[in-house]
Length: 208
Image 1 (cartoon, rainbow, N blue to C red):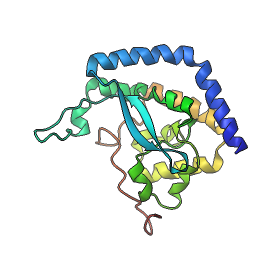
Image 2 (cartoon, helix red, strand yellow):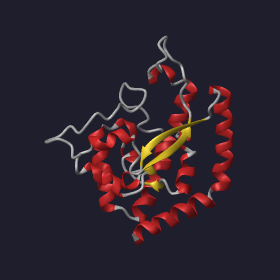
Image 3 (cartoon, rainbow, N blue to C red):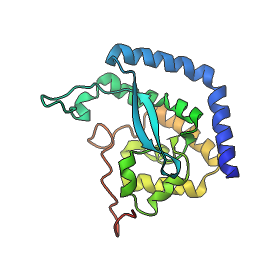
C-alpha cells in the first residue's frame, strides 16, 4: 500500500507540473477533432480498473460514426480516417486519459485498461494485471504496442505487476517517448486496431 501511495503521488506531481505543456495541446487537438470529425470530440468507454472496478475512460475520437443500411457501425478500418490514423500514430488520441490519471482511475504507468467483458476471459495468472491501477502506458506498450499478440501483452503486464517500481516506471516513461516519436507498433498486423480478445488460449479454461 505504501508503494501504491508513492506511485500515486508521483503521478499527481508529474501530471500537475506538466499541465502548462499538455493543456494547450489538449485544447489544440480537441479543436482539430471537432473540425475534422465533428461532435462528439471525446470518445468515452467503460474499462476495467484496479481490483476489477469499472470506470469511464476518455480519449479523443479517431473514427467516424458511419453505419450501414441496418444501422450497424461499419468496420474500424472503414471508419478510421487518415486524420484518425495520424492521431493514433502520434498517441495524441490518448491525451484526455491524463484526466483519468488526475481522478485516480488510472496511473501514468501500468497495464492498459481493457473492456469489462474481457475480465471473465482471463486466466488466473492474467487476472493479476488487475492488482494495479491501469496505465496510460506500460511495459507491453514499450515492448511492441499493438504489434504483439494478446498472450505476449498479458505476460508483460504480469511481469510489470511482479517487478513494479518507480525506477521501472521512469524507464517505461522514457521508452514511451521514444516509441511515440518513432511510431513503433501502431498497427496490429493487417488490422486497423487491436483485434478483440476472445479468450485464454492456453492449457485449461480461464478462471471465472
